[in-house]
Length: 192
Image (cartoon, rainbow, N blue to C red; front, side):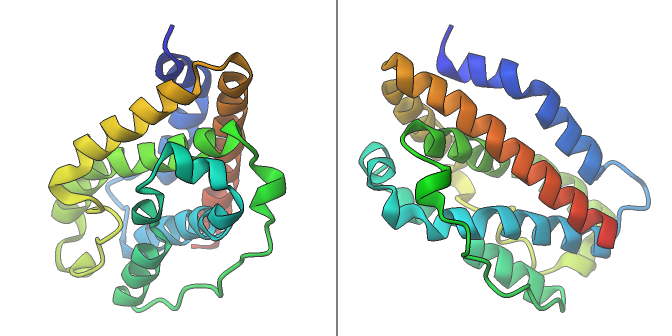
């Protein structure tokens, strides 16, 4: 079984829980809900991205790593919605939290979110229309290169997973990031 298949299988329940939590299919999903979603995702992305320099191995697997950062896009979108993003929380020492393959597993969750963002965007534009005009940079990340960027990422993931210890670490990291995203989104959506 490929590591990608293993990740899909082991994180399926977490993935479904996050989708239910955000609930963009709700007919009453509004701009405030969208802002809460963006806030939760910012809280997941920013500390992790801040720790990338301490995770040199991650840059070796993904030479384009810095172009995968999304915190600035999330901050832009929140400001476009008239929301001031929370101050950057960079207190999480990612070098101790995500080591070796765990960082790749965590990135699997965040890059997977980018891949799936096209579905969120397709739902939100008809639902919220002008209410989100100019506030979709995060959802539009990578544009037409989204599928290619995902393939590049998953190829790096598979290469790293050829080492059994790294593979286990990748799966652990994905589980940890899904738990973090789920908690952060739960908190953000509850405040809304």
